[in-house]
Image 1: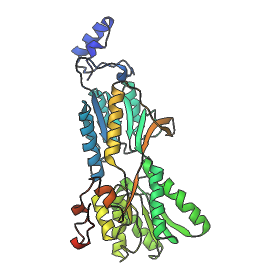
Image 2: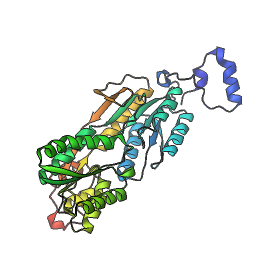
Image 3: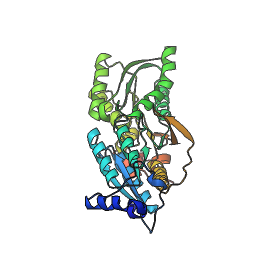
Image 4: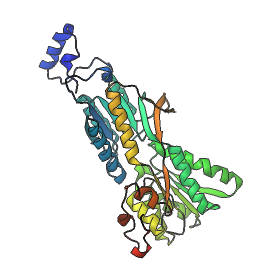
Length: 362
């Protein structure tokens, strides 16, 4: 954290004294960019990490990898998770800001509501990096994620291979999450032309509140009821929603008979894939995004120039962005992707499969 007595001029000494006497911990210059102030006398950079949730396996991995990389780079990190509560995330971000972090990294629960976090951080001269999910309608400094439109395209293309004709169900994620809209956009890039040709028909298309599997289950039940179980394909936006959809399909004796997509390469999803009830998932190498975000965060705090390869519009500005490549995972390549990378172990993925059916590792 920066030592304020080294960043203020002698002319402001009386103001510093008054602040100290009233218990103020950090003196802000009303929006001065903290990252432009050089670290002195071994002061450590402090990175704030405001997370939406830690309830899902994927986000715990992000947290652990991000924190490890920040520490490897010689900085400290303070992480707070709101578990899907907009108000809690705002309060936690304010806490990190008040504690004087040098840069703030945010995984937004609500793409719109978290714009307030950016405003508050900027008033204190703290830059904000949007992690994986884009904060909308705010002057976000940087965005690090995967090509999420491509994720949706991958999901749809793999399912179309399995079911080139018939009735399609789309089960999205949280309507408040910008990524959910990008996944859907990508899927529709593939599906809409097929629907216009008459090859397929999208008979159900709904978001699932807060990405909850139980909401996806309800969506799948509604789709099955409305179409008298006449469904040929399901595109679920992530592995959690896929799990909910497959539960509903299983209740009708349809699990494994209808292709279902997913995303995040969660262990439960990979187990379903090798067992035959889920068709695919999308592996977004978390070590890559955690590493890149940590590197950018520390560099920003040092006042270094950040090179980005593109800009993504968020409704207010075009945000300097780094987008990484996702990987489609099926039963055929699970060994060469998530298992080879060490993301999951062979024995964990195949634990419900007879051992004589396990693939051989080189």
